[in-house]
Image 1 (cartoon, rainbow, N blue to C red):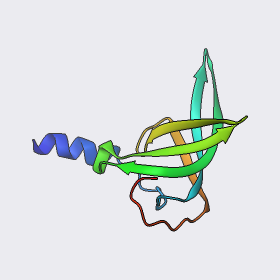
Image 2 (cartoon, helix red, strand yellow; image 1 turned 180 degrees about the horizontal axis):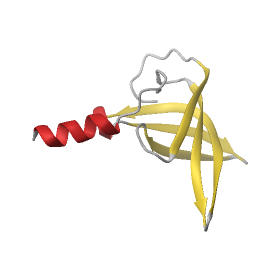
Image 3 (cartoon, rainbow, N blue to C red; image 1 turned 180 degrees about the vertical axis):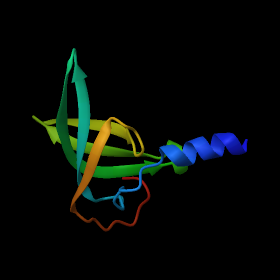
Length: 96
């Protein structure tokens, strides 16, 4: 069991900003298309945070062309290149 915890600790990212509910963030996501790899930015409002440790996730919602789009991102995933905090939010709910 200790070996599993050590592996999980080694996979955790160190440069994760404090992601608060209600904040506006830009998530830089690595997308692989064939042989090429590019970074796509998904900007929206954080509406939920779940779990902790290696399984920690957050949900971002944005409205694109009049249609709401929600994506769930694992915080420590290698496909998430960077998370930028655009604006801090202050809400009184755990989930929006």
